[in-house]
Amino acid sequence: MAYINRGDTVYTAEETKEIYKRRGKTVPAYKGGNMTAVSSSSSGGKSSDDDNETWENSFDKLYNLVHKIDEELRQRERIERRYEKLLQSLDADANKIISVSRESLAQLEKERMLQEQLVVNRKQQINAYQSENSELMKYANVT
Image 1: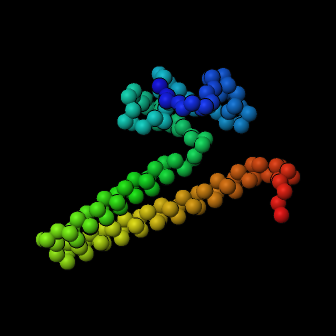
Image 2 (image 1 turned 180 degrees about the vertical axis):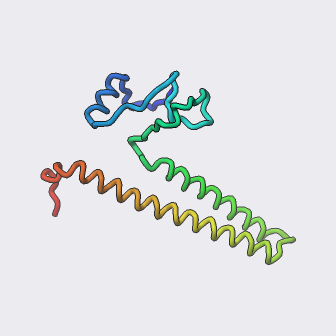
Image 3 (image 1 turned 120 degrees about the vertical axis):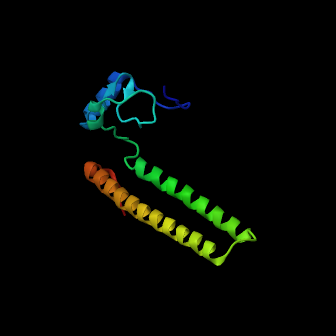
């Protein structure tokens, strides 16, 4: 079951196949009513042939990376809340404060690296999109 919003476009299976044919791509495989690349937390089991098949999000190919960045951001926010509580507590000592500060710095470094990876990948996406659609530049009024 999929939830859709008012105004969303819904295509039949045949329309979807036709769209993918025009783009030169294959349609993601479905087995037993489940998309093969659904996470392991979904209902419905994965067979061994499902491991070789992947599903590509045509809207955002970097979805997993963006999701990971969001998770790291939430982790950093938890560390910062713990740091604030520690500063307000009466039994806080310098070692605890330094430890949480270092943990926060390590978390920020992780986020920075993920953001850099996202920027590099987005640039690659832009370049690929531009090369795929280079014939449309004749219609652009670039000044």
